[in-house]
Image 1 (tube, rainbow, N blue to C red):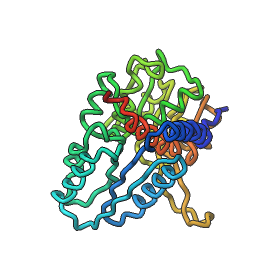
Image 2: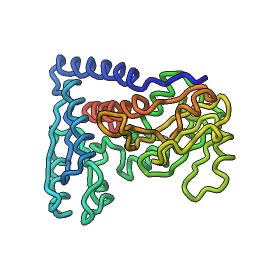
Image 3: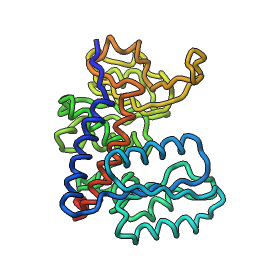
Length: 294
């Protein structure tokens, strides 16, 4: 039977530590960390994500600035706004909430953000530094997974880690992080994706199985080796008329089917999700302290 990895509890523990450090910064005469979020258009999910980030800033004593722009803003105008923030020494971290309107190239926007303010960890310089094992801002969800593995003292060295999904936000950086020479790392990593053949057989070899493909309850017990550690990054809304909201949140793993077979498992919700925002807060604190690019 699996032990539940309680991401909500770990996130609250980390928030308390961050809030204490921010309080000490202020008491020493320094200003609090300042996170800037850019929101373009009226995407409902993006509105929710940004609101949660702003709320976390308030809870931890950060300064937050939310800049809203209409979906008609041009790419040139948005780039100019990013450059203004780059040059503002009072602003420590910048996130541009995705997705952006179709006429704006997200890669061009991300590459324009100052790497020292790229607390989302999406800039090619931060990705490259991460791949080389240099200090870098690591994107929030993979960092959250690392923190969960560390908190629960899950052994990773010499283990076979299978990552299902190759997105640049989760799957790809996760595969790099799990193989690096680090206390949470030193795995033999297999990165799988939609074109992978024999996916069931490959997943069955995993000591640590990280699911990040965005297909609700895709991975069932037939994919899982007995005693494996299951990290479910998936989060999809599915219709559920039994719920007051009319929908339920599902991960990529069939939790009920897998629970008896694994050693550890993250639930959805209250697993990896709460760790994502706290990781962003941690990166913003590091940016305010200037320790990554010191």
